[in-house]
Amino acid sequence: MRLVIIGCGFIGSKRAAAAAGHDIVAVCDPAPEPRARLAQQSGARAMADWREALAVDADAVVIATPHDQLAHIALAAVEAGRHVLVEKPAGRRPAELAPLVAAAARHKRIVKVGFNHRFHPAIARAKSLAEEGSIGPLMFIRGRYGHGGRPGYEKEWRFNAGMSGGGELIDQGSHLIDLARWFLGDLTLAYGFLPTYFWPGQVEDNCFLALTGQQNRMAWLHASWTEWKNLFAFEIMGRDGKLTIDGIGGSYGTERLTLHRMLPQMGPPETTIWEFPFPDRSFVDEFENFVAAVEGRAAPIGDVHDAYANLTIVQAAYDKARS
Image (cartoon, rainbow, N blue to C red):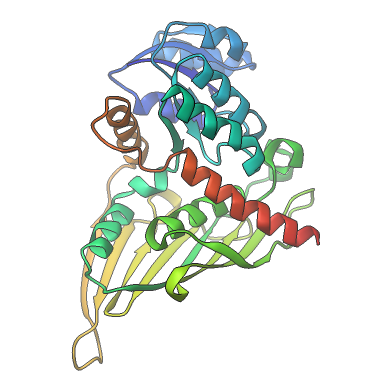
């Protein structure tokens, strides 16, 4: 495909690397250094204005900007006839996303949202095992995700509520919400608590959520910017067993999936462990799914409808916090 990359920071560069083998025709960022660097790496034209970038002849647009720009740039791209891969959460609130949902349907364009955690091998294997019935009917999920920030973290754009739309809830919390919905189906907010414990600023540095769904299914989630040792832990409990994912590579530790299968006599379960000590391919595999969706060979795994449902939960949590 012929691609335009809008947003040349850390994630935009990762998205560009994941698209290796495709033709990146233009990269765009208002900051001169990152756009020049990515243009040199990809052999693309460098532009400062995203409107100019959307005028370039291309099949698809990858958008990796701060949150306040995601939805309206994606909407303009769809209305220009482009397919879109937009970084999560795709917007700050569901009202921002509603026009994009409608435009994608009207123009018959793929709008894939960057929920790359679905493509981590341990999580993808757990999803397959759950669908195969390996742990029986699902009951509930416990998820924890967090890091401890870095010096000066409170001065970065994520702490500007107007740009980010919120703090840790809309940041890593969005990934936990997405994974919980992927396994359990539609969920609604039953309880939310959004405290600020450590980092000064306008936004929360922790979020605690209880989400409920059909058949009394539940997800208990905690995302934190005060996790002093980076952590990812996700547990899926079924009537016949349990799946646990620990780590997602790098500073979060080796990615590991554990299947605990309950025996008829109960007691200690039958345990199987898979480890994935490989470089993170989630962005590559997600981009391959995006290409397959554009070509009509597969459905997008994590699309604009998932993002809208995710932001509906985020909105409910922020409304509850304000009240």
